[in-house]
Length: 223
Image (cartoon, rainbow, N blue to C red; front, top):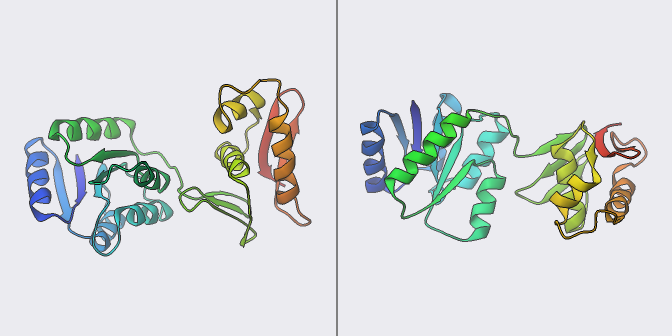
């Protein structure tokens, strides 16, 4: 099993490498973001252990660039910061898991085993459908290359539809994922917000549309 360890604290990197090698892993190390990005794009790894606070490029940016480059090895991010916002940024950039320092080495091993079992899955950091692009980490949407202003709820609805592009998703599933379980299933809030999105997306010459399947739900697809 080949691991890339990107960690700028030399003692931490040395200790983790020694421990992983004792567990039978083949380990390459990088001490900054640029070297880590270079190694991860040049060679194939079964899993990447990536510190957030790195010189050069930080770990979030390294992860984002890897996903944009089509490199889908599982990424376990390490951080000394326990803020929810930091974890969200890393996960939105395409990370698979997060571990806060200090941590038990046994937990690191368990998380690595879990990621290796799941294998490589393509999950683009930026979602695209035709000329529509949504970046969850930057919380930005562009249509034909131009910024598309959306409310927080419109953004959440569009992200859910884009993650299920080409499928028809029911109102109940939308309510559960975009709003919460306390909403009345008979509420027309989904239809109202789909209407808001349609007016912003379906412009003359536009390349995407939201399809309605009566009695079932909605689906986002190329026009």
